[in-house]
Amino acid sequence: ELKVEQNPLFLSMQEGKNYTIYCNYSTTSDRLYWYRQDPGKSLESLFVLLSNGAVKQEGRLMASLDTKARLSTLHITAAVHDLSATYFCAVDPNSNYQLIWGAGTKLIIKP
Amino acid sequence: DAEITQSPRHKITETGRQVTLACHQTWNHNNMFWYRQDLGHGLRLIHYSYGVQDTNKGEVSDGYSVSRSNTEDLPLTLESAASSQTSVYFCASSDSFFWDEQFFGPGTRLTVL
Image (cartoon, rainbow over all chains, first blue to last red; front, side, top):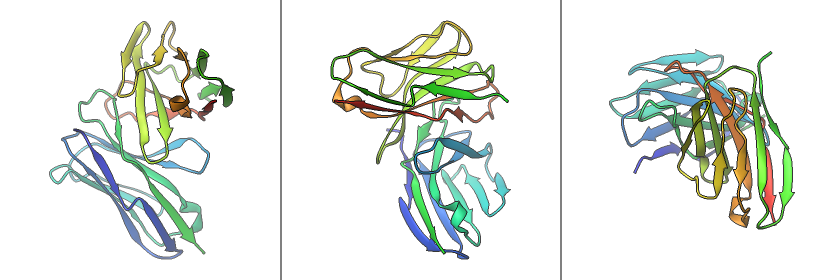
């Protein structure tokens, strides 16, 4: 069974701290996606990671991909309140756009 | 600006009724998708389409159908609504380059009583 596991599922942290969200997947995948969802809102694409060792950064968020370990990380540097959201990872194991999604990590950043 | 819209945004219906949720995109994307989002399950794929007249079943397709008569629209029909279909439904679209991410609509919150 194809599985995408995120951990933690819930994270409460203080502003200014660093933390990492992990995304493990059970089968090979050429690409991995990270999305953000604010409460009651739609999903917004953050990163598309296409190859082993890929690293992308946008502001305080940095995503990386290790296809051999079937692991992606989303690192948050010096967190600010505006980053509070639920973060999802998804993989495309058959390269046919049929994404398999993780359950999401709800991130709360306290002032 | 290109966008993807869904209507209605909220819908309350009764068990057994037929319901159609609309999805319209102006990106001119070939690929379109319907997902449902339930607490603790992330997103699950219901149906998808790679182009006009093409439709395919996803992970949780039972009780749902779609049709694709043009590039812009992929309506989702619940043939006979059930309480288990109470959910938030998202439509998404993407182009056909292998690196393309999916762009999501605002969602439709459906309640089946």
